[in-house]
Image: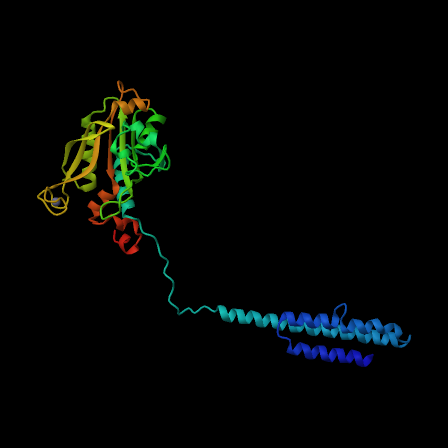
Amino acid sequence: MREKLNEILKSSKEEMVSGKSLQELEQIRIKYLGKKGELTQVLRGMGKLSKEERPVIGKLANEVREEIEEALKEKVTTIEENEKLARIEKETIDVTMPGKVNKIGHRHPLTLVLDEIKSIFIGMGFKIAEGPEVETVYHNFDALNAPKDHPSRDLSDTFYINEEILLRTQTSPVQVRVMKNSKPPIRIISPGRCYRSDEIDATHSPMFHQVEGLVIGKDISLADLKGTLDVFAKRLFGTSTKTKFRPHYFPFTEPSAEMDVSCFKCGGSGCRMCKGSGWIEILGCGMVHPNVLEECGIDPEVYSGFAFGMGLDRITMLKLEIDDIRLFFENDMRFIEQF
Ligand SMILES: [Zn+2]
């Protein structure tokens, strides 16, 4: 039995030397010290020993167990130490490597121009109003005095979700919502994304952006409209900018007009940008139609107002001399970072 114990000690130590991983060491521990392990088997046979031998062998068995445990512990520590070193080795940072450049975003040209437009109107006491892009047909057309047979209501021009819901074709429904939910005086601009069923080309896109404005109060006249938009044009395009109003038709305003600004490229003498005319059309405007006021719960006998709307994409293209609307939506940083 003494021999058997010495043998266990010897062979377990030999196995430990070749053990390379923590799993292998655990296997060795189970093999010798586990419930069915070799040392345990020996101890079970102690009952057969004589009274004198029992304590001697018992002592020896304990010493063997302790020695194996000690050796295992030592080996485990060594392996853990080695694994740690290997990990550190692998993770070593080469401080001579070039660093990664953090890419910081750049404001989109549409955002740049919109921020400028917003700040001009905020400076004149306007507030920003926003509304849903998925709108009801009522808010987009009916409340704005657009009759059922109006061409813009056509299925081929507008994205309908169903008979009553569509993707807004303008931000005017925001004006309707503001008029219905607040009392005059009202002074807002409503910027936002709009949709129409257009083939995409250099100047058309099924998704585009509008900035509309609305002023309602007592004694608001066409002179207020002209004065406000003239200040706006001078702030956006330069103090020498002149404005001109041409009669036009919109169902939601009466009278209605289109506003041209003197060409900010050639100063009015005629160039490629203004197609030789010296003028560039930038927005539509007019006095809010009494039917619209009434529909939105505002008494047209007491209040009057004006409204205007411009294409943000077109104004940005003019101002930054961009000749293709598609560039706005391609998200090419080489383009965006130019502005
Ligand atoms: Zn010009």
